[in-house]
Length: 269
Ligand code: NAD
Image (tube, rainbow, N blue to C red):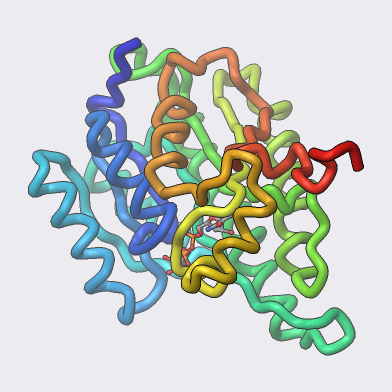
């Protein structure tokens, strides 16, 4: 199966590190022009480094600063990308944060910050993307769909997570956001799906893999016995962005080395 995303423009939010950077590289390798979004000035150097890796390998893209939790910035990002490249074909709703606390100690600021980026950010970007897909219509030289949205959710859209109520709530809500959009816009030939990663080796969860002790404890939750890499997610994002997955719509795809088979029951419970 040969996959080409040639002439398609993809916005990847939160792409200066981790999974977003990995997806950007994979999409660019498949021919997409990538918009590597990052939130603040402090992430610019990292975003530029991701872009350099891509352009050094012959890929195309730009970096773009935008805080996805801010409506005016998201609207402007889509306007600017359409002005520069003509349209947007693929949205990877990836930006996400954690602000962990015991529930009784969780502040409203911690709650709002996580919901603001992880959920409201995905709402704002999806809304602008769908408006653009509808405006442009189908261009079959590129894809049989008007557009594709991939939400980066988590195994925590179904696994409850003590001391992470804000994060788990944001990911659970993404499932309904994704399925509702998939249902509402399927007739318009817009596909909306979620990728639900298990443990992927990125900066968001350094504390879970940066010593042999914590890594061993993490591996006890993963039947396949390895931590995931951004490339694992990038491969799936390419497939879901392409017409090879044209009949997949409204799906949450778990990519977790079997974590959601619940390893602790492997000896009979
Ligand atoms: P990461 O910390 O490397 O990536 C998160 C990115 O989001 C960063 O680049 C950060 O700059 C960006 N970001 C933060 N606030 C933003 C904002 N307001 N606007 C735009 N960008 C913003 O961690 P990651 O693991 O690559 O996380 C990416 C996504 O994957 C997140 O949604 C996370 O919840 C999800 N996820 C990660 C794992 C894992 O094990 N690493 C597992 C499940 C889900």
